[in-house]
Image 1: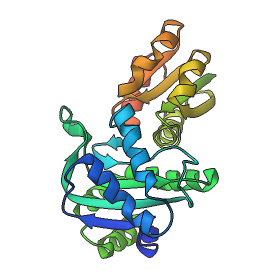
Image 2: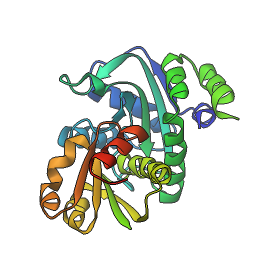
Image 3: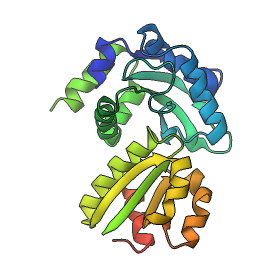
Length: 152
Length: 96
């Protein structure tokens, strides 16, 4: 999965984001550049979070920005990766909702999406991989994590 | 045989994650499960009373108060990928 992020250029490394809204916009950039999603998708996700709260932070440090399956402006099924050096807060009252790792979901093919989600959940259930991703600073680091911890 | 519902706001991301965690937990606790259905909160709210167990992110448990009154066990999760948390909370509800 990390190799796919690198090969399809679905990644971004940044120092910080001024707000969670900005972080979501940034996390969508690599997917926008590749024609996976239109510009409206980032706003869709922001509207969802405004409406339902920061449930997209699925575990401490990890956000999974997404809207719904088959959302408007989604043309391919993919995941975009982003790493921030400085955590961004989604809920000032809950530090467990701070995030540095972003996995932005785009889906228009349910089967492919399910396959992506299985890979993503396997990866995030592995604490060593999450720790390594929190230290990653470049696409080369992603490839190294892939080789050392995921290709077995 | 248990029927389990996993719900998140849109039914496309977080609920799938919960479903995958649930599948692992079911195996490790050796639970007899008929089906796990994943869906959005709006669908889940009306469907919930037909299920034995509903799991959702902690923040959304109040949506299922009605189903809970009808006997459905409602579990809110802090970390939808934590097998440990899900196992502990199922056990607390007497499911093991």
